[in-house]
Length: 354
Ligand code: CP
Image (cartoon, rainbow, N blue to C red; front, side, top):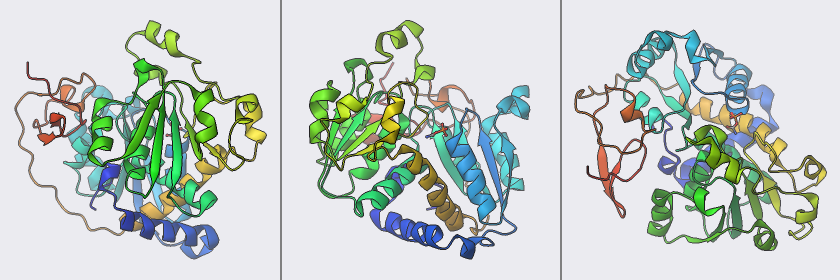
């Protein structure tokens, strides 16, 4: 794999190999202090972040490499109107690996088309967050020892939450996983994700009640309502605070259920839940640093390969207003066929012919 853009590109074999390196890093961190010496990572965060940004930066530092970049795109020439393509071409000429978060869906795929060094998707709008999923899989492995035969509840904003899209995609490759998709109807899992799960013959059920579902679960993955993705603030007001996990609700859960959350949380997990041994979200965030060390180690010695030329010109076909193709003029429209019909190859949304 040249870049990490979409978690669906990750096979179970690739994951097993990565996790085994991660285990060794956790056990013997001193053995890896020089593993990426001389390597430079670019950290391009066009959107706010605490965990992903800092865990990638500290991961590279702990491997002996160095880091440059920005956490505010207004501090780059993006503010003068430079395109994403030109920004990436420039950064790739200075760095050996690029980690990028961008608010536009499909931005990571678009950026990778202009990068001669490996590019890692650190979150693209409400679409995907593959390295959060590597963090989540690591947490399940560390806590349960295997990823199989699990009832997994994904709860909250399943429409806009990129972490749940990536996690459901990855878990569908492991045996005997059943999903309970817990959300208000307005924040249900998008069609392209349901279509993907159906195409894999995946067991899932869509429900609205956390209380009645919690006794069934081995893993409860809570998520924040993604305020920043709402176009109409009144729509956010209608759903904010819809799910709040409390100690009281946890009494109905299995004694060994894991409570996970990609963080940040707002109010969806009461702070008194933090003391419950089932609450593993802070450890989860720490595992994120170790699995990102393993990931950077995989990518940091890759050779530079000039990307194939990109055909510039035609206007976007995608109906998703937040798709990168509707914000950058340099991108060729790319589509492919799925069970849903023709979809945009950047953001995975269905193309509706105008
Ligand atoms: N989980 C996660 O992506 O957190 P940040 O937004 O803080 O990076």
